[in-house]
Image (cartoon, rainbow, N blue to C red; front, side, top):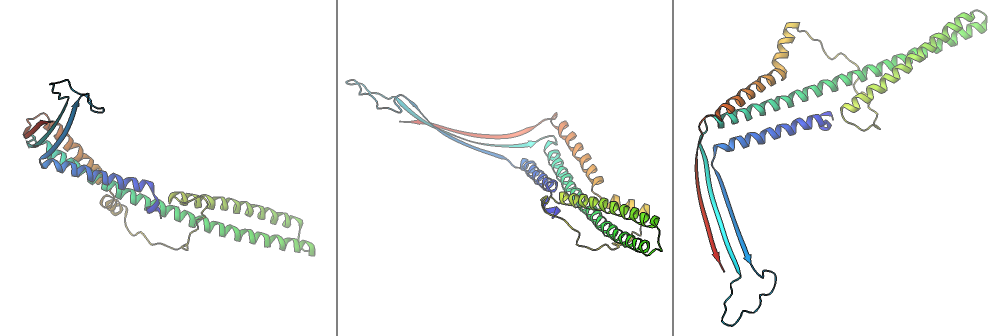
Length: 265
């Protein structure tokens, strides 16, 4: 549900699509560009009204229509390394955004799991505090019964009442923390406020982590995307530097153009 509703994850996916389009644009520089244009022009007098009758023996030609067209072809033969640098920068930028999408997905999984475990903890705490309240109520009833039978003291009754009040306060705090945990996970997975979220899985041991600190650090370097992101960003900056230097070098382009123009009545 979180992966489907997360706006942050949707933004990361759209960013990857944008980087893919930028890469296609950079790759298009390998091919020649073809442009085609055409136009028709009509100019003169009486375009929207009737032309007056000409004088005797006079010929009129008040309107003129012309057509034009052009076809051009251009190709960059030599760019001093600008074209490959732009392509390589676009590839590294796409890789950076893909890694960022992976990082966003993993962060979302981690946050939802933590919120879910917190909800389980809050539910269990409510269950424990309710049992404590029930036990305190039973102790108070026993103390009151002993007092009425003449074998108990008033102090024991007061002590049981204090324990019940404390247990009730702890239950109130636990219910408050449960509402906070429910609201937190509902906000994380972007659900409506009217929906009450409860943990379906029972509390159980998820597993044991049998790795040393050094092995854990090695796994983090190997599996997390943040370090690869920084390396990709470094490559992007390097290719941008090469592209900037290439703009200072010579550029050789091949261009061909054909124009056509004609006038007719």
